[in-house]
Length: 385
Image (tube, rainbow, N blue to C red; front, side, top):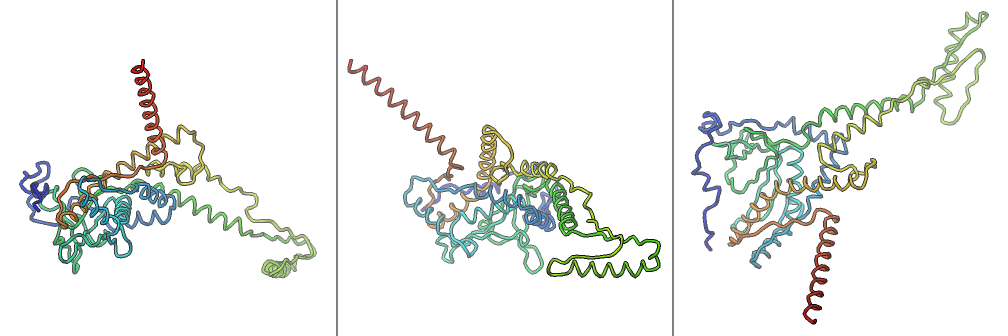
């Protein structure tokens, strides 16, 4: 079966060079010349933030799960059957089935590090895509080839970076790349400082509770004038008896003779109120991630109208992330269909983001159907007259 016109990527080879890039970056003399790429230290920082601040990890997991599922829409029944079977049963990372798991992991890496790399593994006989693999960013790098419009994925082989052989089987996406760079921007950018302040507050709370929760005492012995010569020995005995009383497995009374006072260390000081600063920091984090507080179990006071607006903002964010990963989905399904001998056109159809949208759409359809029914009844009455 003929596949029709040439691939758009093949047509780009005849394009003119980019004029706004310095000439030394257009010659292609250094294949590994790059404008700016993310470092391993930066990726480790973002991973540490997800481990140290649970609300960040929970927000990213919510975004990935709320992205929803998708299906293929096409007029060719055979093509649709092959695509649906592939989406449902393709091997992913050797441990799971389904293309959705691959996309979820792909999007998770994209949000966390600003970059994501995947690979399509075809059958040996070329009869289709056998597996999908999410590559670790520590093993690969995204660099510019002869043009900043032509990106190449390089793999670390024997201590040296070399471009992958079958570039058409490798997937790479950058999230919000800065102009003139090939470095994606993580959704966590701008949060390291805020997260460090939050962790410092939590650390101080831990230290204060270790001091206040584990009560420590100050025992003071005030000898009189007649017993001043025995004050040192008496103090030592009081200290020993106090230690025995504190280390006893059961409740033990402390009995002493003389003027002895016992006070709790730090009882007069108050714990600093951290509710307001912690909430302010969490508001900054949620504003950057675009997640409404109620989705993370934060019972902050908000009106119904405000909750609806927050849900609309989240819907727009999810629509944007869908548009980012949709080219990857199209490329994978297109490659599988072509290897199977099909070149039919198709569209990606996403499920509704939440139940509220479904209810509103069904209510609108009901109102339209009811209006059409009433209009049809009025026309029937007019015709009868």
